[in-house]
Image 1 (cartoon, rainbow, N blue to C red):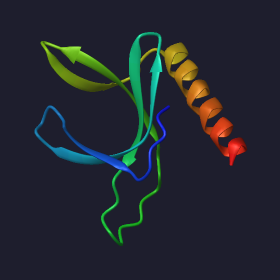
Image 2: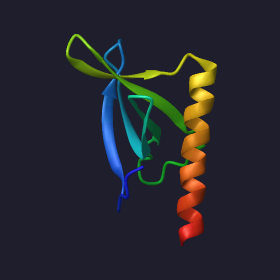
Image 3: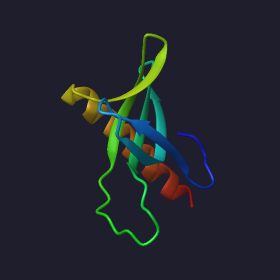
Image 4: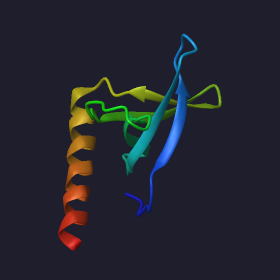
Length: 93
């Protein structure tokens, strides 16, 4: 994971053309792929339940895309690595 100060935000567009702003919590390189842990970006006073999503960065027709991880074992492996690195960072403080 990268050491980052502050938050990174990105806007994605779904197939219906709806835009979503996401806050990137963490990035992980695993098995030759890039994975991102993201939450919906909150608007000021808006209180939302924080549900973290892990998305896989893929390239399709030369365009970068973020997609859900459909393989349960891949998702579990990436989740475990992200948690391991998060707890390692916490224990260093």
